[in-house]
Image (cartoon, rainbow, N blue to C red; front, side, top):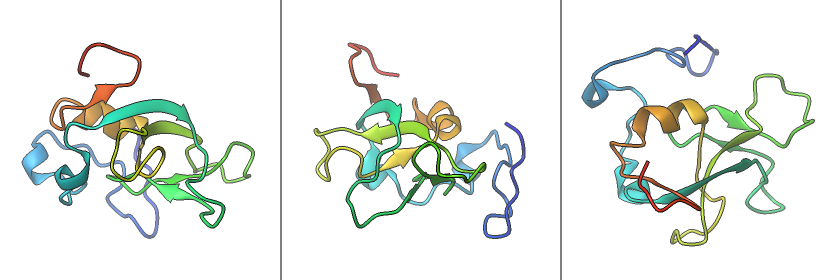
Length: 114
């Protein structure tokens, strides 16, 4: 993973091997453990939301063509099965790869866990 250090997230992009000491872990197991996630293009959760952030590393999600080259336009989102609904929580592809097994996520449209 390439370092993408920003002024607000100085550790963004830092790789770790011990997830128990990973700066991205902030209690997300309370609302994302065992969740079904779907890889899709970013769409705002509501008309009043301009953007979202990855639930782990805080990378910004914006619709394609937004003009922000650092923003993600595709990622993993919660589905209708989640208590908050489809697209409420977003996880970037890097964090999905890092935490899929730990959080026991299911990929929508697949019979297997990721």
